[in-house]
Image 1 (tube, rainbow, N blue to C red):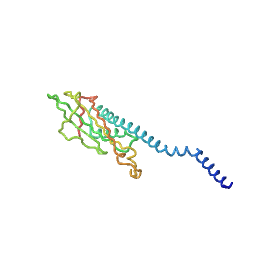
Image 2: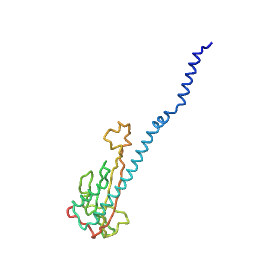
Image 3: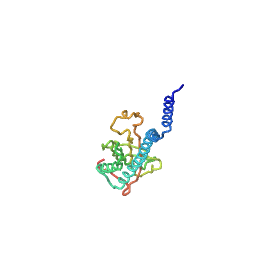
Image 4: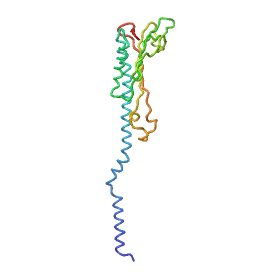
Amino acid sequence: MMRAGAHLGIAGLWGKSVRFWSNRRGVAAVEFALIAPILLVMYFMTMEASQAIETSKKVSRVGSMVADLVTQQPTIVKADLDAIMKIGSVTLQPYNRSTPNITITAIQVTTDTPPKVNVVWSRKVVNGVYSIATALPATTTVPTTLKVAGTFLIRVESNLNYTPIIGWTTDSPQKLGMTPSLTTTIPMGETYYLRPRRSATIPCSDC
């Protein structure tokens, strides 16, 4: 015959079990612990995507601004070209994880039949170093719609290898358990063609 004490012990254990499974006070904490990593990943992905889009727009703006400044000059020298490219590079701020490469090329379309597309002078900045972009004599290509005999063009190419913030961290990506594919750069670039504003050509005396 079961004693009353044993019966009460079983009943008490059963009551505790029921109270444990019916207790919902820790559910919110458990749910947050499960959802928080997903929310953080979504937040960083959204932030990175928006910053990449904004940086891409700025890279395009660099080419447009540099071309506009150059074509406003009746004549120009290397120091002016370098200063204009430096101004263009500053346009990317506050992004500073990589530097843009900018190439300025002066192009003369000849009156020959068919017209030739000659490089008159060129200047570039790559990784912060300024130099001649194309050794002369040299020819190049332009879009068919711009290949008009006797015209002078300024072409500006702006390029940037965008580095996501995950890949820019000073700590090793392996410490965060990240694969190399998450730290690759994203190429961005734009090319602009403009004609001189104040003169038929834009000579560079020391290029």
